[in-house]
Structure formats: structure tokens, C-alpha cells
Image (tube, rainbow, N blue to C red; front, side, top):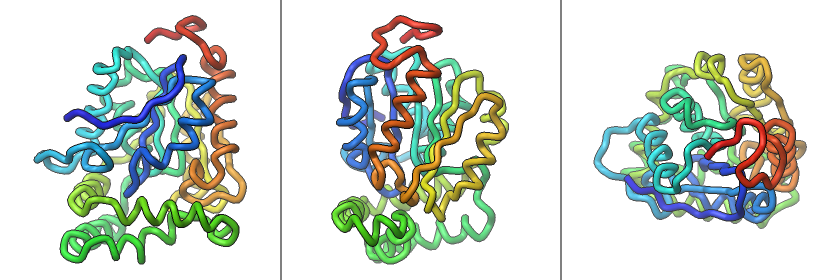
Length: 270
């Protein structure tokens, strides 16, 4: 499986994995805003954007292995790997399966616990609905929770952009990803085993993965740091990109030997 990707910048490689049911297009402001600080690599996870879905059974582990192959293709030994929402789930699977390739971890608006039964049932319901009826169920049920009230009230263009990305999600990929997320295991043990720096970011107004979930993840990692983004909901990187980028830049500077590093510094090798 070869993932389509968008990249920008040079320096420390930072792989950012997108939310459900979006694509790497959601990271536009990160590719623009972080390009002076690092090498930003934003792939489309399988089935979304320009990446094929394939015939495999739904699995976050497969999605994580896709990312490992992407690093191989890019000639990258180790990278900072991060993701928002579903991208966070894939990031934790990557940490579990490829720990020797992780330089640092960014988890945004996500959670380490597994789905309770009701949530798994709802994912299956949406998977079936989108396969039979198209994207309307995503617009009516998924989209409203992705964006915080401040963005809905004050940033209509952002809301419209997210709506367009949701509407363009391929039904097959949506159903596959829902089933992969429903089957995921909890990741608290994965976090406790981390040997690299962790940044957890969460929108102050996130109702899907609220700040309490972010705090729980940070508590699992002794050196973890938490950044709460004001006036942002679940898509904090899209709703408040300047604040999100500032948090990532400071994390790279303070934890990974500086911004704009070119292959030198403490522990940096790629």
C-alpha cells in the first residue's frame, strides 16, 4: 500500500496523520506554518484522498504499517509521528508496532481508551448507512461534533471547508475506517512504554475527545506535556492553526534539540 502524501519544509521529519473522515488536506495550515521548523509529511491514510483502500480487513495496525512503509520510501529512519482523532489512534498503533522508529509523539484531540460497546455499535451503524445512503449521515451526524461552537459562530469559512472535506470522503473508506476504529484496543500501556517525548494537544471545546481524555493520556507518560487550545473544538489544528503550530514548534524546540535542525542535536538520527 503506497500512501499519497503532501510534504513541506526541511529538518526534523514530522509525520501528521489526519482525522476521520478527512484527508491530508486538513493539514494545509501546518504544512505552511511549520515548514520553517521541520519537514512536515502529511499522508492520506488508506482509502482517503489520493490513497487506495485495498482489500485488507479493517485494521489500525495495517494503517500504522502503511506509515512505516512511507518512512521507508522517504528514507527516514526515525520521525516525530503525530495524529489528530483517528490519526491519533493510528499514531498509538505505530508506537506499539514500530517503537524504534519514533523520535517523538504528538496526540491531538484523541483518546487512549477503547470504544465502549455503544460507541462500537454506533460506528457500525454509520458504516452501514454511508455504504447504503452516501455521505448525508456524515454531514448530519459526524460533522456537527467535529467543530467547536466558537468556530461555528465566528469562522464560517472554516466550517464550510470542513464540510466539503467530509462530503468528499469515499463511502468505502469511511466504513472501513469506522470498523477499524471500533476494533481497536486500548493504548494506555503503549503510552506508558514510550521512551520519547509526548505532546498532547486538545481543543478547549472538544466534546468528542474532551480535555479530561487528554489529561488522562498525559498522566500515563511521566514527561508528557499538555497544551489546551482555546476556542477550538475537535479539529483544533484546523480551527486554531496558529496556536496548534506554536505548540508543536515549542515541543520540537524544547524536547528535540531545536527548530530547523538538520540532522544534528541530542539523539537525532534519521
